[in-house]
Image (cartoon, rainbow, N blue to C red; front, side, top):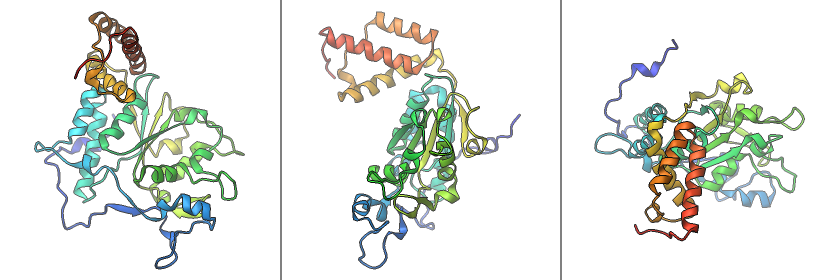
Length: 331
């Protein structure tokens, strides 16, 4: 049996930020962007590029501090809610909680988790869970579909000199979200393409996920070393056979099982909230699902416990109810 060092730890009271340790709230992603007092940010000398990515040369906030606040019972309320929405991922959520505890003990009140690889059958809710985790942690979450990539340009960026030149994906995400530690999700990482000539996403990710190299990751658009070490990473895959061993070694690997039939009610409530958010209406005013529809949805979930299929079916039922004139209910 594999040795689990976390089994030796027993959670006690959550640590509080100690004033003896200086607390950082922001970092400068491209610290070499200024050459003197009052100087304007300069990257590769191209004024258009310098102006577009100016945020990377200024202090950028470390996000998620609000989600690090604990309840009187010494819990992270948002993570408790996540367990309620995804009961089958309870152990993963608890492992994330341990990492947040470590952050607090070190006087670092922002979100930082190890790179996670979720491995499981299609439809079990890996990407859905990744988005939920990002929301629970209070940090922006962006998803890249690696199965459609035939090269690594989206990840590594494009070289200076091209008309459409832009930095690597982590830097674009940081500039776009305004935080230095967004959650970047690599969907279907097992299906990533690429070639020696055009670049391979798997190869590019090696330096992005390695803490030492990420601290001074060289961007070919900005022509300078930038700090992407605060970025949080999560990847999703159906199998691990096609992922190179060096890349696998950079992830904390979590096998995601099929949801249990007993999880149906909790998942349904969470999916209805997601659908309401997507439709930009409060969940309470959506039509109530008829008992016959609930029975069919439950039966289908028991036959095939797929979060993806359940979400599609619930969305179809609610849409049909609205189209048939049931209208929006009252909160």
